[in-house]
Structures are given as structure tokens and as C-alpha cells.
Length: 93
Image 1 (cartoon, one colour):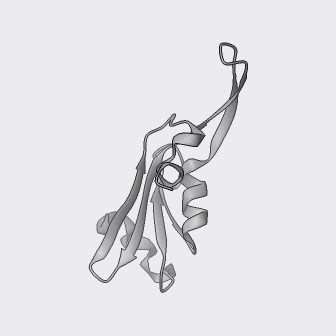
Image 2 (spheres, rainbow, N blue to C red; image 1 turned 90 degrees about the vertical axis):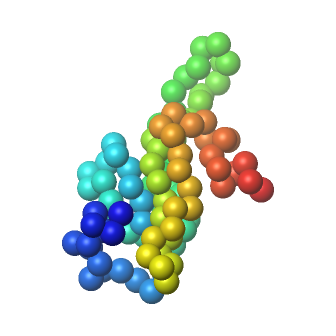
């Protein structure tokens, strides 16, 4: 992670968050707040599920890291296609 983030270190805020989203360009982005990082990973395109007869939202997936005094700490890992209501920050409440 440190190697991937090295080119962007000059832009880091005092308490930044980083996301890695393989389906996005650039893969690594920094966020000023945790809410923006969650939105980046949990972003979903809805699709109509004929069987459920409703629109289903599924995350594009990725990882959220928080900057700590020891480097980067993984906060959340979300698999692509995770239903919106099963995102880890919604389940843990």
C-alpha cells in the first residue's frame, strides 16, 4: 500500500482516508472524510431484479484505509456486488 500511495503523499491531509477500487481510474484515491471514502467504495448502480420485483443496488467494491501513526490500516473490504444493505458499515450498527 505504501508503494502505491507514494506518488500522492504530498497531497495528504492530517487525517486522510484512501480507497483502492480496481474498477476505477485511478485505482488509489484520497478522501478528506470517511463518508466520502465509503461512498467511493459503496457506490452502486441499481438494476431491476425481476424475481424480487424491485431495484437492487450493489457496491462496486474495494478497500478503505485510514492513515495511522504506523502507516495505513485497513478499515473495510467490500466485495464487488455486495448488496447496499449488506455493506459492512451498515451491518455493524
